[in-house]
Amino acid sequence: MPALCFGVMAFGRPTCFAPRGPWKGHRLALDLRLPLYRDLNGYQLETDYKFTIGWQKAW
Image (cartoon, rainbow, N blue to C red):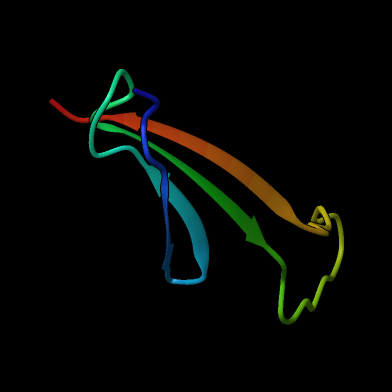
């Protein structure tokens, strides 16, 4: 039987976890972060966005 995947929005982040099957206890999350305000002076690096993919395993 294939694992079920439930999408949960936690703090605006799409999350997928499998409650049963071969992927039981695994969780996959996607996170996109955009800056709201920037005030750069001098040699600071500019950040346009950050994209993170996370995978967790609970037992």
